[in-house]
Each structure stands twice: as structure tokens, then as C-alpha cells.
Length: 487
Image (cartoon, rainbow, N blue to C red; front, side, top):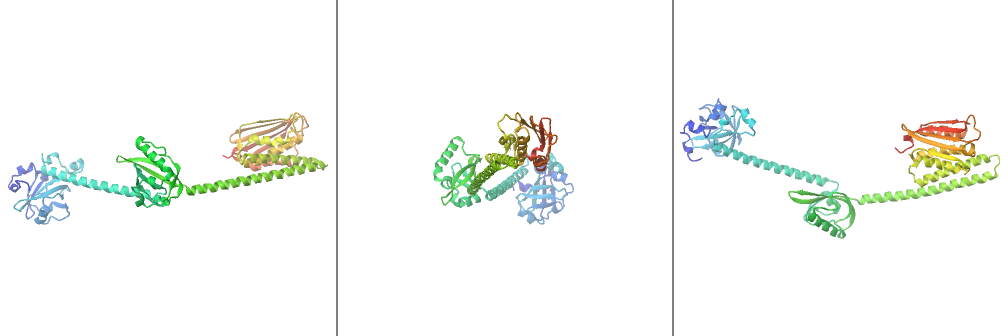
């Protein structure tokens, strides 16, 4: 106890109320012998002569105030007490008089924000102008609070570090962190599996001596030196494909992304690494399969072209010796030649989209006799899928065949005009023939007409019409655009 404390029992209430407004004097029987002015105001039920246990309990340490000896055992230590009258929590210290017959409880309210004062009804006047004990208690509390905050911060940092390590170690890709000198700081589990080193073997060692092949080490060191001097690097913040080295000195392809960062003023690099060995093997297999497919496709095209050429030759030979069937054989020859031209076109395009204009022109070309026929094609560029093109070939081939037999490609000065447009999701197409020959009043319902009238409705859910005009015929078709284009 401080100098002069032996005079406390005999001191006047006025003397103590100034510096010690939150005080309680207790005798050996735990009876209250004096009460400070702030306690009297906040706890009016507390009276001289009452047992201290009626009004206060010890919260820290957690024990009973059941004897003077218990109080003496915690004298001059910071404790926490609670007022049973008001539920007010206070920091406090017990001081024992030199004679050992009196205990002085000096306290101050435990508050964490101004609202606690207002809620308890505490006023500024309830504190001593220069409350040394309160200042001491506040300092002790601040120290305890700071220690608790430090512990909490360290605990959070430890959890964050553990979580970070768990996340990094569970990553599918290898992750390696190095410092500005190129020495390994961290090496996750995937890196251990990928490169065959243990963590103990690599931490603290230069990365260039571990996973970088000898032929690339010079470039790595030059890049590190440039970053240290200029703060820039050619391969930073972007994926690059390079070669890495395993612990057994074998090499393999990797995809590497290096991200620089700073921590507490020091520079580091984290590399995320993916093994591309399996990916390269799969790509090689795909390339080989694609090459085989091209060879087979080429061989199939060659065989089909030879077969069609043989059929055309047989038809022509048969036409020379035919009498009644000569017209039928010539018609068949022209049809097969048209199909051969379309097959050749599809082969050249390699299964890609075909332009509508090129398809129509290819169907008409075998029937042009160089006699001055006029063929006009007008319409926007329209790419079709190979499947749609094969189906439309039958229609245009039939139109061209009929034109060569009866219409615009048979008579001199005949003409064919094909127009198409796109509107409201539909391809609108018109094939119109004009010539000086005889025009039938009705178009016969033969095989050719059946092909024209049924193919588009059946294959594309479109609408068609075929009508004679005073100078020839007109064929119209309306086809949903999404049935003939890739989209």
C-alpha cells in the first residue's frame, strides 16, 4: 500500500471522497464501514454495516468473498467485481491496512463505450479529478486488452496461414513461390508430385538449380536480374509454354503463369504450373486421327469420282447403240454428270459450308451448250451446310435437266434467271425460264416434277410452286433459313 495508507481508517469521509469516489472499507467480519460518494449515489441500497457479500460478487478471479483471508490473498491485484444492486461491472483492487484489520476496495466502472456510462447513470462527477488508481486500472486494462488483441490477431493470422497452406496444398496445379533472389519459399503438394522433390529438398534453394533445364537457366537468371533492376519481366502475368525438369533430370512440357507480389516490403513470385505432357499426347492422337480421316476421305472421294466417271462412260457408250431408249440414256448421263460435278465441289470444299450461288452454277454448267443461253444468278451471299447442299442438289439438278430438255437451255436465245432473298427467317427463291419454244398448258406429273414438288417440303418443311408462263416456267420455293444454314 502507498505511503499514508495506514491513516485510511481514521481519515475523514471528505478527505477520501475526492480522490476515491468508488471505494468501500471492509472490516475483518466483511462488514462495510465506509462508502464512497459514487457508490452511494449509484448503489443507494448499500449501507454501512451491511455484509459486503450482499452487494458485490467477485467475477475475476471466480471465487466467493466469504472471508477476510480470501480478500487478503488477492490484495493489490487487478480484479473484476459486479454490483448486485445495479449489475454494474467494475475494475477493482483490494488494499489491506498495515494492521491487517481493514480492507479498502478501490474501484472504477468497467466501460467499453460512452453508452455504458449513460446506461448505468454514471456522470463525470462520479470520477476523481485525478484518480490515480483509476488511471492505473485503466492502464492495466489497456495492457490486458492489448495483449488480448495481439493474441487474437496472432490467432487469426495463424488460422489464415493454415487455411492458405491448406488451399495451396490442395490445388490441382503445382504452385511454387520464390523470393527476389530466386530461392524457393513454398512448394505445394502438387509441385512435390509433379517434380519429384520433397519440400525439405527445395525450400531455401535456387529454383534454377531444381526445375529449370540447364539450357534455360541463363535466360532465367537474366530475367531475374532485369526484374531486380527495372521491375519488369517478359513472362510475368501471362501463361507461357516452356520445358521443365524433373528430379530425375527428365524434361516435360508445362504451362507456366508467374505472378509477382509484395509482402511486408519484400518481393516474391508465385508460379502456377500445369503439366502438359498428357495434353500433348492427346493432341498428337487427335492430329493423327484427323490425318487418317483426311486420307480416308480423299480415298473415298477418289473412288466415288472414278465410279461416277465409269457410269457416265457406260451411259455414253450405251447411247451410241441405243434406238428407242436413247433419250432416256442421254437424260441419265446428264444427271450423273451433274451429280459428279456436285460431288467434286463438295470434295474441294472439304465438308465446309457451300455458297448457294456456287451450288446453283455447278448444277447448271453441265447442261450449257455454248449457244448463247443466258443464265443470271442474283442474291445475297448465303452459306449452307453440306447436308443442306446435298439435298438441294437434287432440286437444282432436276430444274437444269428439265431446262435442257424442254426449256431455257434447249432453245436458242433461251434464258434462266434465278433470284433469291432473305426475309423474316425465310429463303425466298425463284427460278424463271424464258424461251421461244412451245410452252405446255400444264406441267406433266412425271418423276422430275415429283422431285421438284416433294423434296423441299419433305427435307426442309418449305413451300414450293411450279407454274407455266407464256414464255416458259416459274418455280418458287420458300425455305426456313435455319434448316439450311449452320445457325
